[in-house]
Length: 212
Image 1 (cartoon, rainbow, N blue to C red):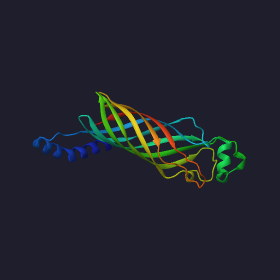
Image 2: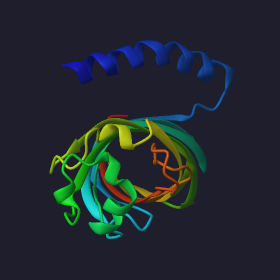
Image 3: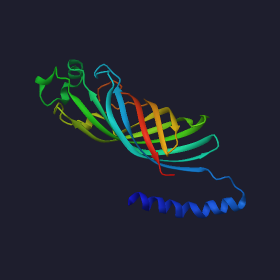
């Protein structure tokens, strides 16, 4: 029902403009509106973190405009990422944040949920295949300390960071889109007063259904 109301609102807004554009002979960009689901596979750089990639999920919406071989797409989606600390190395650097000093060797994990907002320029490479590139802002929504390792898990991380995104998307028949992206963190997520950059590296895979 919500999707229908949203579609009706978009039609009510766009239809008069499309009629006017056709009357004036103006080319009308194609409007994209889609929901997406997928996998968010990420890690944090730095000696205090386990450098292996950990999988989470992502889900949200995308809105875009395309004309001929170029376009722009704005998205809003939640993603979940799991980070694992590297036992003694993390303890040696951040022992002051621990609840229990006896956990010095524990490889605790943090589950971080982000709200991601990428703004992507799109370039058509070949039929169906589009290059996507642009910036992404990621705001931290919540941090779960599965092992109750530290006193304030969310306080360890900055409230948000800026990344660069590059990827490919196949715009398939039946309103389906399939994509893969690499997201490179451009700023540090470390919110402590202890030096050391925590920069995120992420691989994203998604499947989307386009309503328009």
